[in-house]
Each structure stands twice: as structure tokens, then as C-alpha cells.
Image 1 (tube, rainbow, N blue to C red):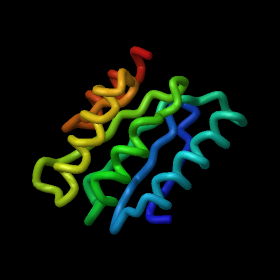
Image 2: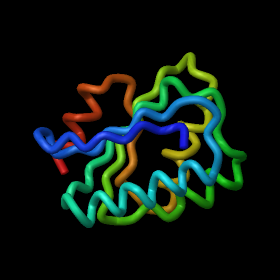
Image 3: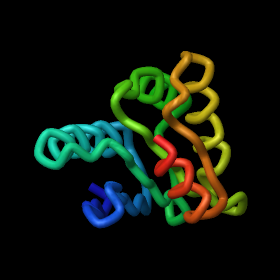
Image 4: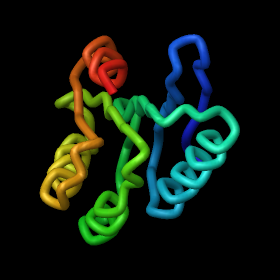
Length: 120
């Protein structure tokens, strides 16, 4: 899985570094791991650094995955507008928003993402 997952209990956030070529299976496995960590730690705030991604799954896969984010989970994605997957990251946020899921947001800066997560 091209993700490194770290539980930052001091801040109360699960941090994920997502890199390389990302597949639908990778994202679904990350969500499974997040659910396991939620069950053991109670942490439901997720910070994903996507700036090192090279590719994402196709549009239909992104739509299906990000249409069903668990209500209990808050996800902040950090992006860089120059990264290859920036349009996919933006689409992921749009999908979640259009489905009435306001628990996923995209940020340019880690500090802004953490501030938003801490408000939840």
C-alpha cells in the first residue's frame, strides 16, 4: 500500500502520507485501516498528505469511493496545485460535497488542515 499511516495521539489525528501510483484498492485498504484505528483509538480525524502522489484511480472509482465516506470520519487532504493528482483531489472534494458529505476538505497548508480538524 503506497501509504504510511501514523497515529498522532498527542494531537488526536491519524496522519497519512500518500505517495506514488494510487489505486482504488489502495484507498479502500486505507479506509479499512482507518476504521480499525478508530475502533482501537477513537480517533476520527484524518490528515492525508497527497503531495507526493503520481496518479489516482479513474473518475468513476473516485466518485464511488468518495461518495461513501463514513459520517464519523473527518478528512483533510493536503495538496499542491502543481502535483499530478491535483484535479483528482479537487474532484474528490467536489464528490463528497455534492453528496452532502461535509467531512472532507482540501487544503494547501498542513496548519490550516489541522486547524479545521481541531474544530471538529
